[in-house]
Length: 380
Ligand SMILES: *Cc1c(COP(=O)(O)O)cnc(C)c1O
Image 1 (cartoon, rainbow, N blue to C red):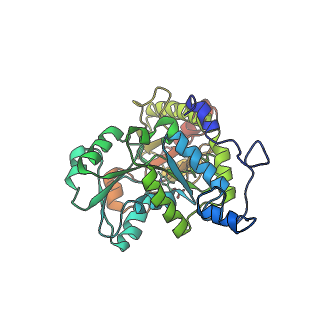
Image 2 (cartoon, rainbow, N blue to C red):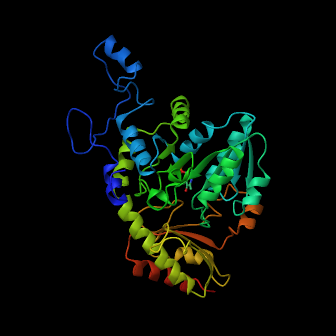
């Protein structure tokens, strides 16, 4: 990388390589590219630059993939239509029918569904297990296990994965590792630099950062990315040029957004710890002096009417997503973790009183007061 993260995040987006030197790469809103003659066309297949067809490759989608790969210090990347399609490409680059995946039991609900409902239909075996203890992970590894899969900071209870230990377990059992780094972003954590093979992002979240684009990025080892890129091309899960362009535009402010949002999140979490009507505050306080991620999850005490709390949130929007510049709240049981069986949810502690707050870039004091007020007014 070039310099410090705040500089890299801007300049990992390469200078426009096209003949007309616009300051920002224009949107190549085209399905295909043209050729002067058969020699030029043959040249494409010989690997001499240029583009052929946008599902296979496009300057905007490549720009996004290269920028995230650079920030994660990985040699290769591919941009996709969503976080889930990036996960799918990563998983399919590693496993085939008959193989086994060991995944953390507290994965994002959509990822859980993808593995359990879809991949299992193609003969891929999956075991979900607690990743808190090394022994519980190792106890479910089988002779056909190929992949270990976790999130660097989990959703919604914000468990921080010990990446070094995760990599050690994989090395011992000769497994490929995949980390979903959506919540941490490369601002806080760069799993590839610690030996993880594949790193995935729902760029819909902090990478894009403005709640206006759905996209994903997978980065990692060159050999695995070649396979993953083929999956994206063959399955047609490429991202559109415009969405890639918007994501790249959002990426440029990642460092300042994460800095402010993480600091605000830590302040809010601290304030909520003092609130008697909040039974539990989930925030990785011990990681990062100025905050570690911008999600704060709380469990309201049973003397708070949860629905009233949501109604009283003044300017804070209720939205089944996270990571935008505006503070928003969601209810995991009704939305993101609906796919998880109730029993599994309860065992994890994801109950009706649990509220996930995505902290934005507003003034911390305003964020704190809006939550204090909403909780107070909903007190029974
Ligand atoms: C949102 C999310 C996803 C899925 O991303 P989409 O862009 O919605 O497909 C995957 N992992 C995590 C941690 C997420 O928060």
